[in-house]
Image (cartoon, rainbow, N blue to C red; front, side):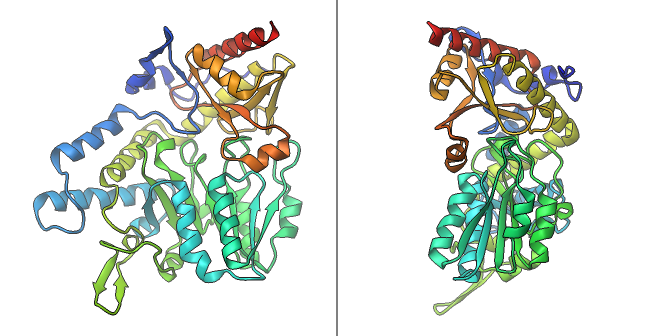
Amino acid sequence: MEPQQSDALDAVRIREDFPILEREINGNQLVYLDNAATTQTPEQVVDAICDYYRNYNANVHRGIHQLSQEASIAYEEAHDKVAEFIGASGGREEMVFTKNTTEGENLVAYAWGLEELGPGDEIVLTEMEHHASLVTWQQLGKKTGADVKYIPVDEQGYLDMDAAREMITDDTKMVSVVHVSNTLGTTNPVRELADIAHDHDSYIFVDGAQAVPNRPVDVEKIDADFYAFSGHKMAGPTGIGGLYGKKHILEEMDPYLYGGDMIRKVTYEDATWEDLPWKFEAGTPNIAQGVALAAAVDYLEDIGMENVQRHEEQLAEYAYDRLTEEDDVEIYGPPGDDRGGLVSFNVESVHAHDLSSIVNDHAVAIRAGDHCTQPLHDKLGVPASARASFYIYNTRKEVDKLVEAVDAARQLFAQ
């Protein structure tokens, strides 16, 4: 059944905040459908960056002068705003700013995992993990002797929860799971997985890179011990992300980066650490990006995250239905009415890289490759897939343009 036109938000009006969408490529107006990799940035967020550099550019936590005070307040308040956005009642003490989701994974792996894991311990991942999670915990397992196990993905792209209940045992010390798959579009039952993990005294780390940007997230309702996400996937700048951690866990962890701003007292013999979250933010941080991330949160909250989610899901369902009108298209993951805002697919006899190149000639930007999920693509039996992913400024008309560009590629390879 064809989904109704998205009524969740006014995408046409929202597009006015994104001048880049007026660009032309090969004489055609840009259709940007690579949002799972990086979203575009609205003028309001760009203005926040410019305002920082034009009016109060200074280092934080190190100066008594006016500019440093203003920068410090803005940067600290940004932590509070982002923490509130994801439901972290502990505020800035539970919100560490990182470069991205990947750094959040590595921070926990090295600051917690190297100290706590050893032979006989288990790390449980899923077969749909992004390399940010999979490679990080895989390599930590090699360093510590801990075993790494993977919850299977079934033929429809869902986690095998019966297998999960068997695989998570009293030997499990960490469960790391992606909230929404960047390849399949699957939304995982993270609260259920958290309950299973906690029943076995294990921690759970949730990769929220594809969830925080496009749906309401409440880390306390999920009962996540750690939750990471990236600013550049949620209308924010690159180089900034967030790591939520329960306060009592973060307090027990030692930092894994050392230097300025994360110390309280230093002698020639030893050092003590600053309060949370600063003990995990060594050196001069990404101040402008942190302030801009808070501006991105303001922007998304004005739209309403429920509206963002509904809009994306309607576009994904429409794209699923349009692409499968031809029987030579295979789409990976759950049905169109039960997926996040992306569609990964292949067209018979057209390699994903060729497809991406040809649709680019029509000014349609999609992703092609393994999407940092090589083992998952191996399981699917394909070397690569094409991926169209949607955001607040995309429209059904742009989905139609994608379908037209795919049809052009199909005809070219049929010659």
